[in-house]
Image 1 (cartoon, one colour):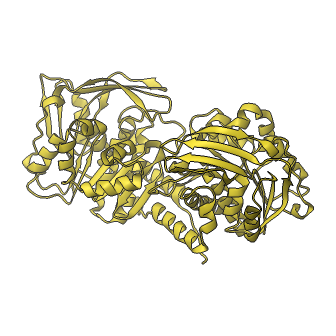
Image 2 (tube, each protein chain N blue to C red):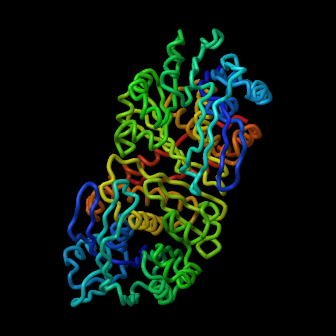
Image 3 (cartoon, each protein chain N blue to C red):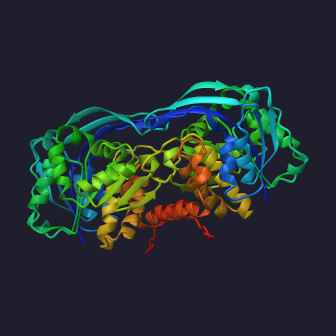
Length: 308
Length: 308
């Protein structure tokens, strides 16, 4: 089974209270691919990079089972670049630099060999690009999930709403869910967003965990309480990669399995924040992942005898 | 089995985005008693009120199985009074008025009939008053839990630290845990607070749920996602009442049972916020409570086969 991933592959410069990086490899699709490839191969990657993007990083992704057949390399251009600084609480950050570069006129192309994709993760990108990919698919995937952000709500809400009618699952953070729905209560926000299209809604709350909404059901997975959050960059994308990777691996679209996928996504995200960039995702073994999922079981499991 | 409760019984005036009350009955011990008495009778109440405190409210507590033998009524004085206004997010509030009145020189007296208490909940009060109660107890209870707040950390930290050496469980919010420990990470905060005395630490995060720490174990219970949080006043005290009421009822101090008690506390708190004051706690039936606990089971339960 395969997972089709669309998103940015980029450079980030990151400052946190714990340290500072020069340009390191980042981008939504990079994090998604590293996380998803823990569960599913091939990950079929659609993205665009400049001539400055390190060959070595591409080779490492290929070695991990990522098919780069949909990654355009624009030799004479530069990759997307973002620089940001996190505040002490790690929940808020300032963007210092955004250079779109190759992303400015990105025209995604779905290779013929990706046409049979059953599972699709549309990383945070312009809704026009997201729609373009959906329209290129001749065969309706079993599950299309997408991420988005406040920037697209502010600038391309109509286009975004059109994409929402085409997807099964939306993964966004709490502030984005509130902005998109105009509702402060996340329960009401979920109901409003379901009406926009996505049957499944995952609201990511960072250190406060993640909520999954489906029909009248809700499920909650906490974030693992960590001694240190070193760098939160990419945690949401890593969550999405773990979530979709697990679903593609299990091929099970039941709500019960989606719940487990939320826990798996949370577990992967808890690794991501332990080091800068995708470093930690490159290191972890299947055993590390299973050990961490067991920590989530311990964190969430309780027994009660309901007497009445 | 009984539960000894110490804390304020008071008047509150509350403004939320949803409405405004005149002086209604509140106070930590009032909320704790209403919540705990869902599970255990008698609740042995130690508090102080003025001549202005409504007889009817005291009668309703007695009818619920609350023994008011430790509640001093100062006929010619006024009850503690607090007025506050919540912001739109309901997580932050401004205090508009605080009148200590009878609480200013509160000298708690433990009645002889309360001396055999096995379970004790010290609501948020001056650590001097909390210590005074502990010192009056001739027989060490099986479990002493306490609440406190930033005000006591700012003004009576030494006295507070002495009380902490005498208690088994501390229930505070995340900002308080950070202030008390000087650690931003809640995992590190928990470790530091365990060293101060309490074996069990519950960190309440309001709409973001509650964490229980014990030795190297952690457990997390989410807050129930609600359509509307009408009035958060007393939710933390209600949590404490549900938590300690359930423990006193089950007489089980294992970590496993503490986890369940955290869920029960969260369930009770989810009722509290649905109406102003203790109104909702007066209305709920055992069936309502069980139905709500089942919602927590649904919210938290997932299955995973760890293959490797």
